Amino acid sequence: MKLSRSSYYYQIKDFAAEDKYEYLCHEVVRIFLENKARYGYRRIHAELKRTGIKVSEKVVRRVMKEEGLEVKIRKARKYSSYRGDCPKTSLPTHRVQKIPSQAFLSASRSSHCAELFLSVSRNLS
Image (cartoon, rainbow, N blue to C red):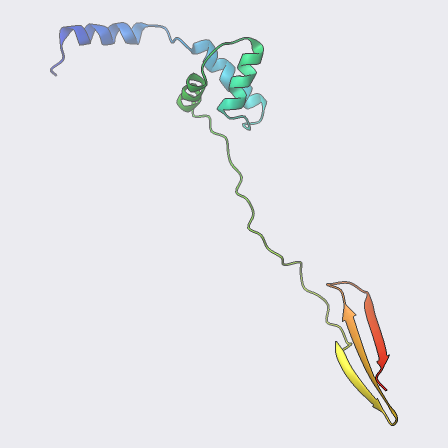
């Protein structure tokens, strides 16, 4: 392995160093789990700010990524106008009745899946 002496000793020193954001890491995880994994980095940053911990949003994002904290996003449901099957009606929608000297036109309408029927008759003579 070809590695310069200065890089080797730098790496040893770096691995031995204490984690700079260890306390922050615990706080971020605590806030995330307290809120049922619904808070993203912006809300967590605001909570930390409220408690008096000054840190960048980018640091919060990095800590969340290192800890594997992800907010689960629900997929929006696709729009569907389907409301179920309607019962079949026994009344026709339009019919013309002929009585010897008069002609009547009647129309029946039903609302969507309701028990209400409207019937209108009109004298055409």
